[in-house]
Length: 349
Image (tube, rainbow, N blue to C red; front, top):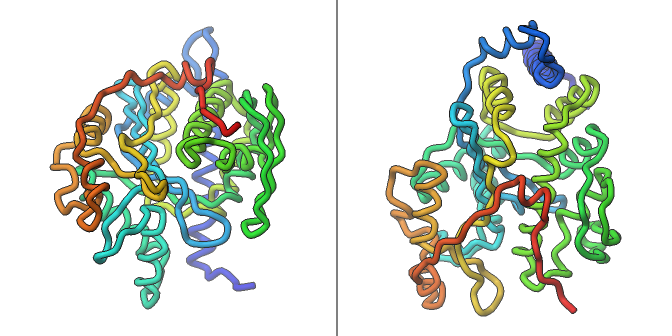
């Protein structure tokens, strides 16, 4: 085992201490009473609310694919939040090849092999490529692995979810074994991983899984809104420290926490990036007009969408057609509606 240098030990201690302070602040916000001004209210009043857009990535267990990719915007002043999920199978033209979006991080990491920190370099490049293509600015990235997800769910005592269907599936290659029965139940970390990774039962495969992830995220946020103990939050912080890579600074955390606390489920939306699956079922092609509208409405996009035609499909007539087809806007349900009513996801017979 490598020993930490004195400088690294100091940095780890500062990170841990700052997360602990942040956890205590969040707990304080939960236990504020109506009996007058409390110390927690004074502290929170001193922390400015923020408006930030983050690139959030989830890495798989067996490779360098980012099978979870989404943009999250928290607007503390307006008390609103939006999450746009980018399907892992999103069509990308890269180095004259047709590739899937979830593979870019691994490709960039391989290309950065000679650098001091290939992982961080790959994340910086991925953020740069995506923000340029989407015409937005992000305030940082977060990459987490599945261990972080599992440990965090366990740390908060599990999440209650209405499992819509029986989920039974085995994938020995990935070490994935799914065995969940339909019904409302408290999922621990391992069961939560099964729920958010299951895709084989859905007619639309990964798009069905993305909808199931909406259900889980809404349930998770609802659980967090109910308040957690100091011990639970410290446990989550420890897992985050160990299993994430982020460009966020320590000064960002308190403002993010306070801003997130201001957002109600009724003022938060989560949606899949507009697009269509191709006839082969291999690629998800983003719709240009739909993306322009959603990025403008929810992420204040100011730059042109996809100036370098990353998502257009130079080598694929069908992809170009799907990219340029007319877009019909749809009403988006709030996270509150999803938490209460779920989502109708078509399954295989």
